[in-house]
Length: 338
Image 1 (cartoon, rainbow, N blue to C red):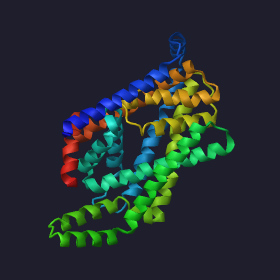
Image 2: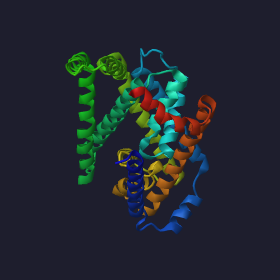
Image 3: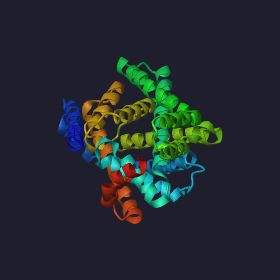
Image 4: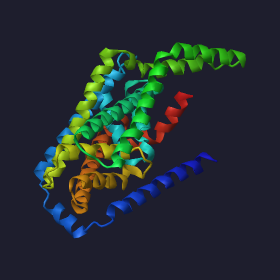
């Protein structure tokens, strides 16, 4: 299958999935009640709810400094923060979380970090995020009875992220043995690519080396909990702005379900999957569909405006514009990774 056709099929499938979940989210929603609630939103409280978003992304940049510690050249905190926001903006407007590719390209162009090293550090970062959310969900389940679909999320998430963590640990810990095996394989086939393969593996290992260093991985784990605590404060603040008194377990479950929902392929911005996840999780705590849908709309709009707006600003300042960076990101990443 040609790449262009394959890409079109993936985009079409993502849009179809978004439409299905959007239809499920809209089912039974009484729009006059939603508009009435939106008209009474407390804008001052909503503005305060935006503050933890900024804190969360500052923390993400701080965590990235630990994961990339010792990389040459080592990017500055400013460069990491800029690339993080640019990538978040890309994830909001591009399908299949392609913003991560834009993020890598942004850091490569500004901070000089190797593509393979940046990519492997982002994979480790995502695994840390998944494991952190799973730990929070496991704690919630000790204090609250949830339906079976929540248990299914925990089980599927554990299989995915614990499995990924094991693979990364093995790849990091047995890099030299892996290199020896690849070198023997190349010699048997008289391949001249051994040196290039060795270079790429070495670059990938730099992004994973924090796993074997407690002084790096333990602060990264602690920061991961602070990141999701900040994100939870934003959800709670949006609820207060809409006069919804959300309990802490409702906020945390919504946060977890929404973010695990982002794993599913969907249209840009996770339209549909985001709203359905909010309605599904908040419904367990007595929040009706009208209120939950209004909450999802406001939260989604707030996050989109903040992340896209700040990402565009940093892209204009540091990269000459987001469009230029987005158009060159895939080509640059693919070229350097070959």
